[in-house]
Length: 165
Image (cartoon, rainbow, N blue to C red):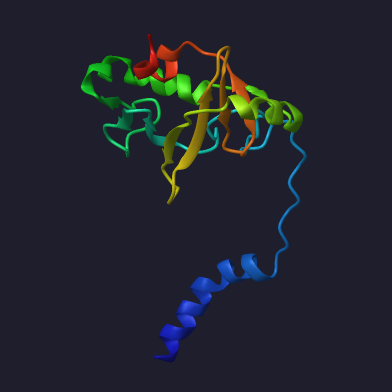
């Protein structure tokens, strides 16, 4: 019995020495950007994997959530948008607007009617990101994952095809 315990202690010694006795090496300074990105004006979080988007009567979802990003196949409800689904998701992931400052937002508030809520589900999130969007004459006003208001111009068919005229 003592021999078994002694054997286990000898086997665990290298790990214990590394963990408790050797200080970690300082990492060299790197010019590369960190893994976490923060990009002003991005609607969706570029650091998380999108698995579903529910946008104004259109649902875009991954056929297989476990597939790699490169092999992801997106489907849509209504099904008539299945052929566009991959491109619609790419459009959503790349959309970026101009940050709207508080005085400008206050001037726009009287014109904000009929909000649209877009739900974006991420793989590791328990709750979706809720994007609030208002359609104005020249642009859309939307919230970002950083809770900023941004002005975004796009062809309705590129993000919200049910709004296309």
